[in-house]
Length: 571
Ligand code: C2O
Image 1: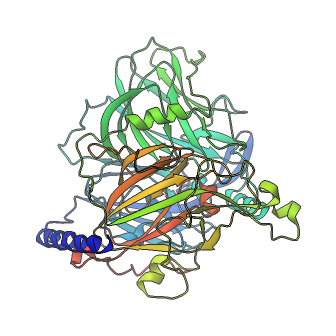
Image 2: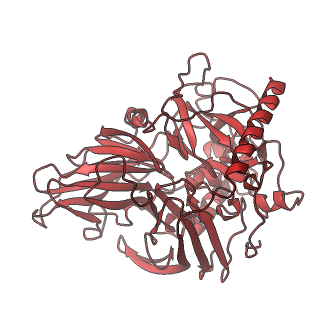
Image 3: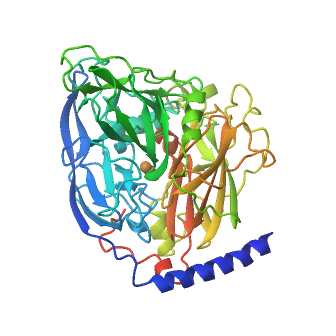
């Protein structure tokens, strides 16, 4: 098996490098270059009758939109004018040969410290659609986020009727506390994260919340016209349903890749997911709610249950009329989530790797560690007086002290190891085999472990949710790649019964692994660098639900990661 895989890897890599050599001077030619100036700045805002300082880009909340066209080059100078550490990640941008500019702190760069500057430069190679950027350090992402809208090349139409208008709709979560301190407090407590104080749509909580009757986002619509909403879930610790009262949503794009159009009453987005939906104003003139509510699949977790509401308001509707309520699924409606997933199909037949060179089986879930504190009341508020953690294959990811990419590139020892296991230590009934009540030591081990992949290898990853503490839908995000989601289901993954779609699976960058279930992804590891793979619920990431894939250089010039930029921040 191993020999066969190696042999085949060689033939693939040879033919691929030949192909890329032949292309060398045609790519990346790119389109135009777009420059942006991002100043990390604090802003005083009043929400929910409370005034506080939040961290923003250019004092905008949500932050500025990055507009571009497919194949454009993007240059963003980021200057940190706050006392907090900052980085920006360009979520969903595949960063072809530009891993240095990916943004996750301690993975590809040290944070940009107070007063410092770092310029991100990358090309949107063969990418278009709705993406977003966000801070990738501590929980700063709670307020440091904005949309990236990449149009097709000039003259290339959408594969659907051009909408009358487009609107960006960013789902978020808002805290009254300082989120950087909040993360530290939660980690020090050993317990769960408190719910957000509000859900927000384009940073507005809407009329269901205290003092927010006028803090509402609104789209004015002309009867009969079709609108495209670019939905982005930038929430920190929640997955969310979204629906518009009495209106159908037609999904045409997910994670910045076109899908077959699929009409539904509501969608679910995990944090990190984006979706373009068409909505036709085909109802009687009125004021309709666009609502964002919780999807919580874990047990015994407290969460915000008040939905954020925005208005989809027809021109001619009485401004003070009551808005018609949207029909959101109940918070634990797993079937509604499955229905959305079932609807996501790539628009055209796709090229899914059929042979696999590297196959990983990765469990994802929470853990409880034994209390090590002398003040357990204060520090061990997890199940059975333990402390909460999370892991992949029972390895809790610990951040190194400089970036893994820098350590790897400069061959600096002691920052990480290359022994992330390709499978869990033991196989058992991951979903139901856990005791009803987690013991206070689930044996997770700490480590900064990476998995090294040869350039060009065809990779399959089976993600398996565990019930060690509670089963839960985990939005797993992979940096540097999109991947085909070829299968998913509930229970334990079983190769005998698993059904794979190798014809038109969606091509995504974040996959919600079903609660108590599994998902299988495939991609070709043709982008060298150090790529973070983690749960996009920040509390899980803080607890260590992540691992790192290192993709080696290939042989040709377009298969080799360039040198680091001169202004790469130091730790
Ligand atoms: Cu959008 Cu590593 O994240």
